[in-house]
Length: 321
Image 1 (cartoon, rainbow, N blue to C red):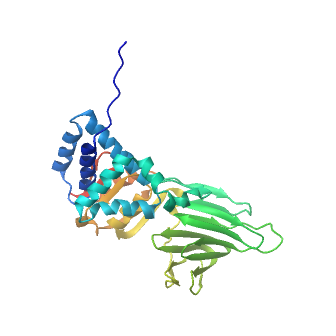
Image 2: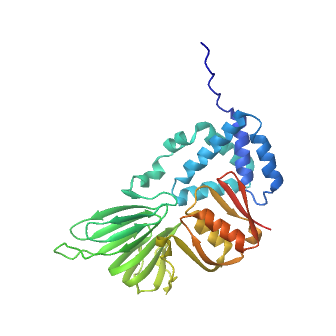
Image 3: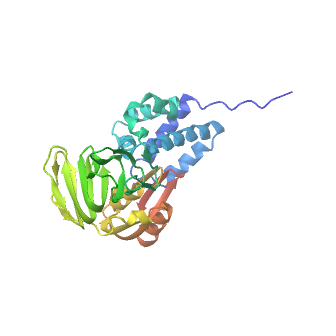
């Protein structure tokens, strides 16, 4: 009785070629010819297709990392030392995404947070004190209630908290803390968003006391915001009136750059979304659905002098017409 032979895994040489394509697709100016060359390469054999599938598997794994970890991993593909980048990616492909994550487990300890959302996911958490916390895409938090305080530790991402009437007999302040500082609610509704090396605090109702790590506190009223970073709080500024639109599935752009819009949509979309440098400073206004990033991309293409170039579902570049 004959049996069908098992498919052979892609060779290290093919995985290196797949790494070359990964680097190529993160470069500026990828045109139709490059995409056609890639399709011819991938169609050469099942082994070529398997090598690219492993490359996309690596991307899928990177996409589940915290934004502040995954984004630099993608950015490093643009490093001038192209051969080093290709060798590094080739090694990751040979190891396999799961092995790489196991090897580098220590930096991702925040994955053990009690509450988490993945890319594009939002979640509402009802706390024991009656507070409601809405978690935005790619967020992780722990809840630590004691006899003296109610603390939410935001490891990454963004939350919108609406404080409840605490049933405890003794007063316990409600705090959202990050590595940059903390926001103490004074009966309020507010947003805390961790961005790279800083934390933004936006007050939607009542007041919040924002305190940077090792710095002086600032009082924020409704419609105000500040940023906590490097031991100080930035000057208080008016908050974006649509800062909480994401909870209803929308992002409202008010005369921002196309690059800023792409950065925001990237938070909700798996894979690599890039904007060509030549159009990055175009100004954009409008409402974009974050729960359907593809619809947002179609809207951008329909209303602006750009086109959407795709290389598989992971690699999307917004280019000039």
